[in-house]
Length: 125
Image (cartoon, rainbow, N blue to C red; front, side, top):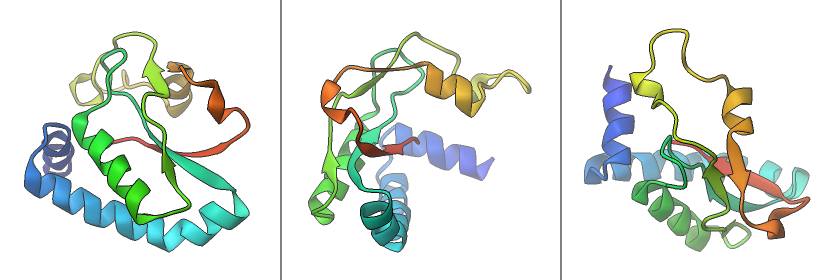
């Protein structure tokens, strides 16, 4: 339950949750940056949209902007992905009703063609 509260706090812009998320994500990007940059050719970071169609949380937007400024090889592309339709939030779904990762991926629409063939880090809160 604490983890769910942390995620919801991040989504709702709680400053302490944002700070902790930033530390965790920064550490992860730093740990894997050589592999992501050199081996996989990642150049972009894009936040996944929320369960609400065409919306990205402000916290995800801000975190991706900060990572763009901290890692010169990583560029934030705003507004690339959108949810094709409104869906039930994962924390509100009954057991067994949460979308699989494949279903989640298939529900995303891409609004920008400049990512064609690019390796992307998808930040999903």
